[in-house]
Amino acid sequence: MTTGGAVTSQTIKQLIKQKDDLEDEIKELIKMLQASPAGVKGSLVDADGFPRNDVDVNVIREMRHSLICKQNDFTNIMKKIEEDMFVLHKQLKEEKEKNGGAKEEQKIKPIIPQEELLPFVFVNSVAPSSPAESAGLQPSDKITMFGSVDKKQVDSHGLQIISELVSHNIGQPLTIKLLRNGNPMVLKLTPRTWSGRGYLGCHLLPEK
Image (cartoon, rainbow, N blue to C red; front, side, top):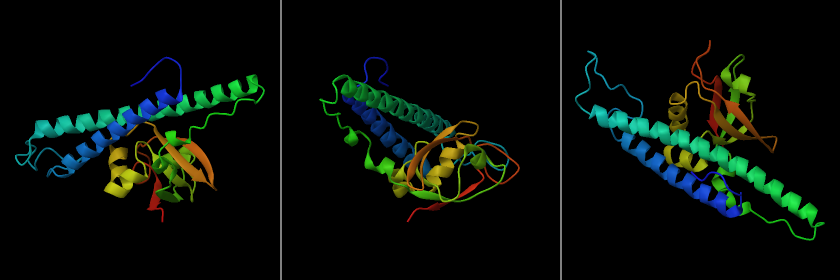
């Protein structure tokens, strides 16, 4: 991952390239795991508690571990992109003010892929005292990024990919980007056990 040094449009584009490569690797791992009888999160032992004989348990474990690591790397690189975007905008603003507005602010709109700006699910309901309520989610919120999952991934793999992400990140905060009444917001949602069902306490439906 690119670290240190001055923040420029070029360094952010390099981070975007790393993010895209990671996304492809994550999708390929999920595809291979889904093709296995054990799936992404199925048990690796049989009813008697012995290792399953219909899969290579060690290979599946390695693939699952790799998936978790890459998903964490994806989350970290997305955070880095957000931070660098903020720094770059600040630099451009200060430069513009320093030059008395003579220099036109550089446009960087191509940096963020369109898929990360489009909502793919909306919050239908939020249970009281749930992790979702604690995070600040509200009914009718339209989600554009759920951790490392964006619209393109959901279009390819369905909403199941969100469930898989949640199950691999219990106790770990996920960055949720959303639109509320048309206004962009960023929240932190930590999947965890609570008094209700599931790990989130909210009902998500596909955005039409």
